[in-house]
Image 1 (cartoon, each protein chain N blue to C red):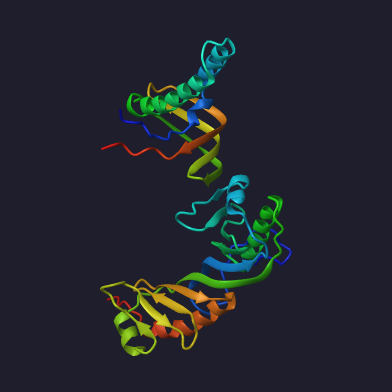
Image 2 (image 1 turned 180 degrees about the vertical axis):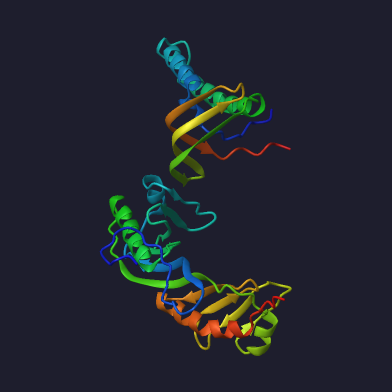
Length: 204
Length: 112
């Protein structure tokens, strides 16, 4: 685990689900927003910045990409910025600060305000084969499954905004959480449910 | 008579051919042989014809591999800076370069 003083980017593979025989949850994407409190001229950003694309006909924001940590920023005229693609909340915050520094060097005066995580996407390998039909039948209230449309079953956690896409292979995608801790809670809740619906191979 | 209302890129004026033409025209203007307006018209014709010739007549191919250092897309123009490139030409001759800059504009659609 990276220490708070570590400036290098951290790969977030949570292992607090030590009791469970699973891989993950491993964060694949974090979407966050921040207000930089200053108006931007997107054409100036596109001309003076590096690794920028700006095509107003298609989308009204400048898209800046960074290699370390690997992240993408959508910068809007109003001063709002979205940071996408980071693999941990710390990386996302660091990337947001680096993007703000980049914009500062171009002559603007950004001031970071209201940094908030909007979505965390993570994958988990539960290492079992799951009978989605049984899962759908037993937990009808919580699950949506239309195999002709999409092979994954969509499991919603109680009143939470978090959803889990459950696949027959045992791979689970967690969407919608806003804190890294929420991922552990969700997978702890979900594991026993999935375990009941697993396919156990009988070896003769 | 049909008017040719085609807007072409002035991209090729900074090539060796373009610069040579511009220098020649400057010489002709200073020796009072031609009007500046005519020189402007000639550069315009140069823009159109070089784009046409490169599109229609040039068939040579080349491939290259390198590390993309920076990119930019603004006003529908791509600018790339690539480092440590290895070029491969049709006659299997190769050469290496430390850094190249590519400026690319949107290609015109072929007239029906």
